Length: 171
Image 1 (cartoon, rainbow, N blue to C red):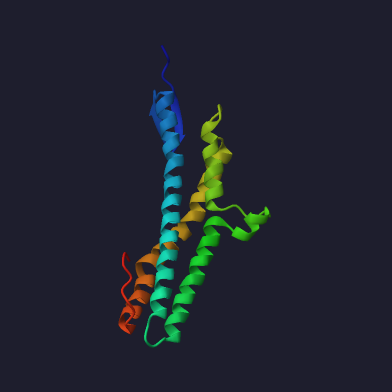
Image 2 (image 1 turned 60 degrees about the vertical axis):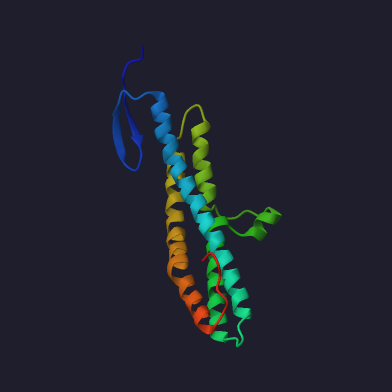
């Protein structure tokens, strides 16, 4: 029979869990590492969705009877903003293609932190710190994506609609 121990688990703060089993402990730690991975995947999905929406707006713009350069400048600005978010999220694709070293991305950091779950020792302080850094780097990207998808792109979409562009389905 196993004795009960007090185990400190860092999960957003610290909490004491009397007599928790190793399975429960590993489940709690796993969730602490899985949630940032899920947020990263949702941010990736949102980033791809924004890119598709921008491409659809460009196609709709070129189908206008009378092209409005100011409107295209706004679409181009959103395209540049999207590219900046893509670099913040994934790094420079060209550097990756040739194997050049670049700064870690939130995904790199979260992945390194998750590797701590597969060691016999468990996550170290470094794994927790890298996880926290990855989450902190992901937050402004998520916020910018939310602004892009919920206010900026719909505003340009409305301008396109008023200019007589065909509707963009699924947006």
